[in-house]
Length: 312
Image (cartoon, rainbow, N blue to C red; front, side):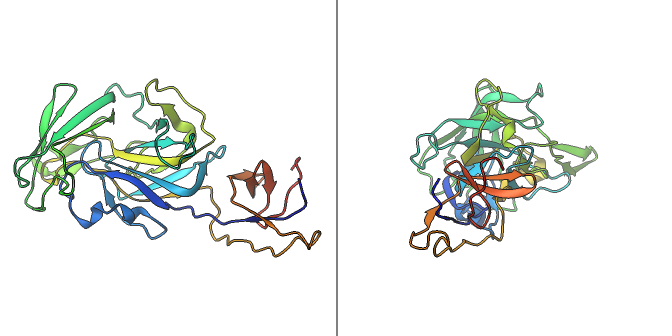
């Protein structure tokens, strides 16, 4: 390794781009919380995913690394006690290097993974109504059907108006319903408790990439890091006057990127003043013996860009 200092470019722990957004029908479609740019940056705000299957795909300005013995990713939702609308999380690497989310996807296995009521390979199709002020019919691949019902609180169209199609189909994992009426004498009191771990908009929203599984076999996979994240509404349920259950997210954060680290400007290497510094973006963040280190092209550096010995 040459003696030239490496300038480590600071990276943001927050979402830098939204690559895909397809909400399912629901009562907040065609409102300001259906704006995908809401998720970008440190000052992100709410994005509505709609009923079962509605999703968003986003990325960061770096690869989110799988750091041993630590949670890796936080996806912020608007859940609170007994008001959780769990969204399933999927992750993917940019294996073909084209910057697009078109490689293999894996799913984060949460607390309901082994539940007898969890349905894998679930598919639902929504049908555009003849009039946008009508309820929206859905049918699934288990022979069930129902409606996304309109309510008096939200009077705009529940079918995304800029979507030029007659049907909308989603396929994925369906979580067990988590909603119930707490007091059968009071149909207004709906409770939606969260699952113990592994989902978005679920109170416990931080995940470990070690929880990733193959979507088809449900067997664990080992990922060194991921480039893309997808969240989709994981339940198909309607809660009376509250309406359809929909995952909402407010942003996401890579938990292992040091914050407050500015770009290190190194004009020259004191040992080689005539040599221009090399500029690289870190490919990994590692925590060793309590030290936050950056990995660049297989070598470790401290946060000032100084190379560390191989036996550190």
